[in-house]
Image (cartoon, one colour):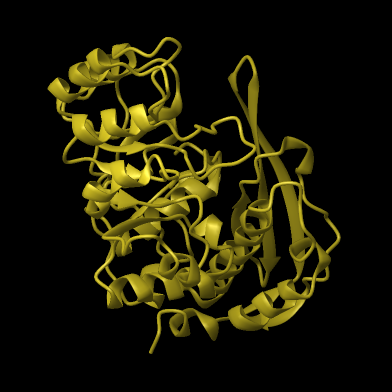
Length: 353
């Protein structure tokens, strides 16, 4: 039996549908906006988070024909027929981001109504979650931010975003700190503020400077391929992974991939990906989307069940702040699933994740 079969038949009754806009000023030039999706029924509530990055697309339409009695599979089929989830948005990934908000809320509601926890539904036990902290290093890039976090949390691990202005001296300093688990080259992004054009010098610098780190999302060109091929076993992928077909189409068989549920959109595609990884010896790890609400708890919950010991980019949200501060949860995160539903403790509702 596939993983999706454990969820597909869960029953839910949807009697109400509400939205709440969440936002946080991240910097002078960027306000992160997401939407909290609330599905209600039988006195219970299921929650999900729409992590679409274009703020003007929040909240999604409040009038959708969601009321009725469903299974998770029939609810997903209902979404298949709605224009909101079929038309092409300005950013193609937004369609899956939005869909995941409704699908995750539906599973939460179904399990609340059945008085069951998600872990029980998928027959797995939560385990402590190892996490890394993801960041860029400023302009100009220095080790200052990394050192600041390490002062508060010795042993903290990082996923860093190299940029063309990285130098040999910077890489040498970081390597000496011994805290880099992965480097995200952002080579598979197009039309976003984080795009990093393929740079053969940069690719060689980080591949050789961090000989044990994962190399995520390089762009494959005639110039970069010969640099990357000797390190193919360390190359992993994120932005282009939305389905099993995407995994099978990768230029090298992966040892690991970033499984972000919001990129898959539906439970069926996410579960199929987990099944595929298990069958093919691929070690997944989790990733975040700068969630402000329940979405962060959801990815931490999934990490605790499917890849707790990986380099999960699911750090509590306070690690996204510019200034390090003491008193934050340390890695590994202690499991905090709620007794019922798809909920990772109080943080699932409060957004304090």
